Image (cartoon, rainbow, N blue to C red; front, side, top):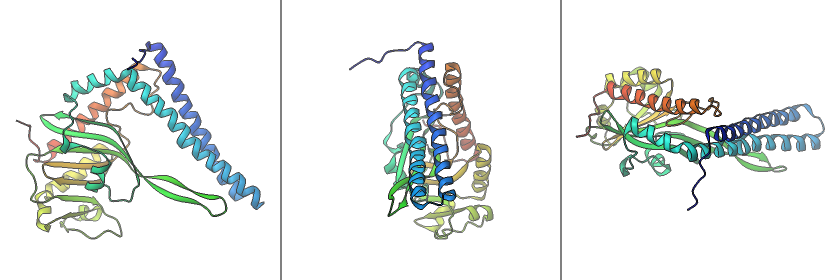
Length: 306
């Protein structure tokens, strides 16, 4: 196995800055390309020229913004993990103990398909920064999740392509509870074409969510008036949108649409400043601790492991 070269802070800063600059540059080139393609479609009168320019500019713009910009970002992330991974692992252990891997707390495509936390059609699943640890003695796991739906765009003359459209971008969080419900309970964001679900009598909750369980009465093991009030406050304090939750066995799981990245460096950070990179990573762990404190303090579902 080839040992990776450890770069000096100056060399690492320069290399990370290069990848970040390339990522931004390709993104803006792609943005201008797609805008140019859109403009050409509406402005040009020559049908042949309009078709060529629209196709070239729009497709080229999408390629630059998604693939080339994304490729540079992936190289940046890989280099950061390679060179700063030891620091990241040490800080995670300091905050939440060993990074565990228990089968019942996994977050992957198979789990997301089975749990149905996000009740929207999706085709592509990306799970990043999956970690499992303990906070206040309670076992938890979390990951940054992106779900995309592939939409077929184009026409018979110019050809078709599948273009990803985001349907969920945020955090999936799972926590071990002190007990289990009689049957699995699932709560998802209400949509116009979804079945009504169980009516809880809580007007604000029923307006935004639908609940279901194998037996209707089992829903109320979780959805007490106090818990439903708590969910609204939990959303507000986290500055995110709750899209779904489930209580299955002894695990409560939530899908929260948010720009927060767990165990990650914020996108706005200038990666040439390695101290800022380290501070941002630590801040993301502190934000998770705050999130867990809000959740654990808001209901009586959790207890420290013995």
